[in-house]
Structures are given as C-alpha cells and as structure tokens.
Amino acid sequence: MKALTLFTLLLCVSFTPLVHGQEPVSDEATHNELRALRDALLAAFDKVDIEAMLKLVHPNVVFTAMNAEVCRGPEQVRAYLNRMMTGPNRVVERVKYNVTVDALTILYGGDTGVAYGSSLDHYTLTDGSDFEVKTRWSATVVKENNRWLLASVQSSANLFDNPLLTYVQRLVYWGSGGAGVIGLLVGLLVGRIFKRNRA
Image (cartoon, rainbow, N blue to C red; front, top):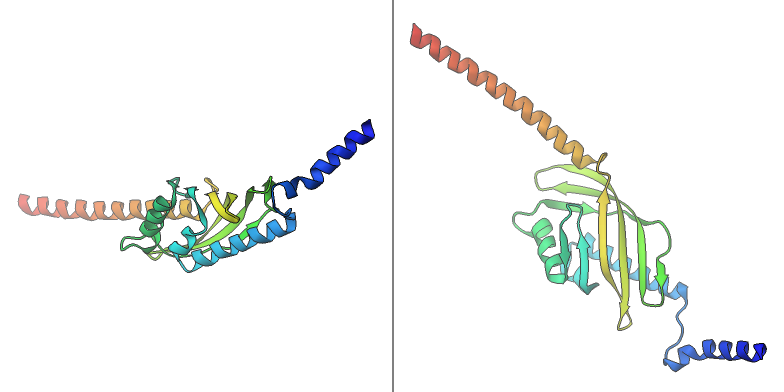
C-alpha cells in the first residue's frame, strides 16, 4: 500500500508540467533570463534611455530612490528620472553604475525572485560635484506573460559614512567660514562709517 501511494505521488509530480501544458524550466535557464534582464536594465541606465527602462518594469513597479522618494508605476518613475537626470533643472549630469550581486536570485516558485547586492556609483552633478557612493540594493522580479519584469527596487547608502554627507559638511564649513568673513568685513565697514560720522 505504501509503495502504491509513493508511486502515485511520483506519477502526479512527474506529470504536473504536462497537465499545465508547459515544459519545466531549469533554474539555470531562469537565472540566464534574469541576467539578460539585468544587462538590459543597466544598458538602458547607461544610455539614460528612460523609455527602454520602462519597458522592463512591471505596471505596478515600486521604486525607492536614495533620497527616500517613492515612485509607484511607470509614470511616476518616468517623471522622477526626467526631473533628476534629463530635465532642464536636473540634478544629475551623469551617473555610472558598477553593480555586483551577492548571490543568485532567490527564486519563489517559477515566477518570483529576490535579488540583492552592492554597487559603486559614480555621480557627476550639474553643479560640478563629482563623487562615488557605495550602495546596497535589493530588487524583486516577477514573470508575467513569459517575461521577467522588475517589480520593485530600492537602494541605500551608509547614513554615517558616505560622500554626500562629506559634501554637505564641506558646504556647511565653507558657508560658515564665508559668512564669518563677510560679517567681519561688514562690521569693519560699519565701524569706519560711524568714525567718519563722529568726526
């Protein structure tokens, strides 16, 4: 009886893909598809081709940027990227990503995966600032209509040790020093005016 039950179970498992009318996909084939998605996304980012990027994201994509701004859906992502990278008042002149993954994407069934890793990002801002930021990132991918799409992505930098913090501190330092010098000059000028008026 036990042997018959085991045989029945194996038979059901063996024929499950056929019942659904599809061939089983190996993990290696899935990871190759995901690598192709990653490469296409990075190529689009490198060219700042926003429309090419949006073709690779899910309609309900959630994107959390390093400035803590959250975009949901392709339209919000498009508006954010245009404002930050292509518009007349953009902040970023150029950015180069050097993305690495910590491990293979963690697969949940055949249609969902979670990837994570790090990136060394080189930013050139429109004000001439140039620096590198080490970030950590995570992303969720889903497969719909036989296509892998980016469903969510977020990145973050070390709050206590990053070049943006150093940059702001430097601005505050020089700004305070400049304000002090201006205050001193104004004080000297006012003092001279008072001396002349008394004379």
